[in-house]
Image (tube, rainbow over all chains, first blue to last red; front, side, top):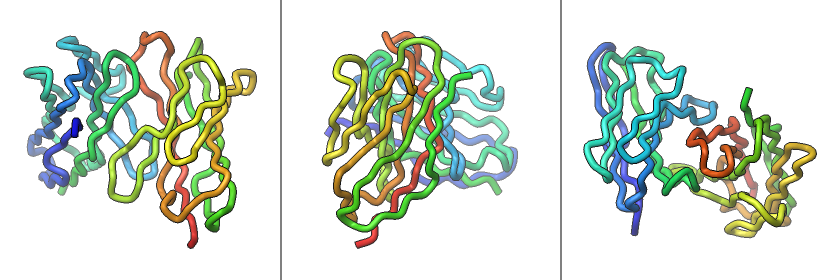
Length: 111
Length: 115
């Protein structure tokens, strides 16, 4: 089945230690998104790639970076995680700006 | 500012009861509207969507939603819920015409259905 895959499902890191979350897709969609979802809150878009074009949301901290080496993969890099960055990170894809398909998420714990 | 409001944080129903979850949005311009569902331990899945045309849209598993432009609303309904509908439901909006990628979500409504 075509799908959006996120690895790992659970990630524990230490305060200030860089961490990378991974997303891959078999849908061949041209748009990939990263969302942050904290407990009891709505998912919040951090940034997205439209093809190779990176689109950062205005209020996304510089601590968060992303890479998309090819159509299938997209990475979220958190350079110096703080306690406030503990959250569920959701990857999604779409063909153009249409219906988005979500992965299962990676739950990040910062110690 | 663009926003989505979901009126209920947690709804508890018995099986066979009718369901209506409220969603109101604030967004300049023409919109696309979505309801996503997240079953326990699973990822967000699209329940239904409205892009244009008939304002009453039908989705999977017997759900439907009605877009009322004058009220900026897109309420989700199901005539008879089942225990398996226990999940969290998110309303979301983005700009129509494929102009914007930013999908704005509501905070979600947790639905618990008692068997």
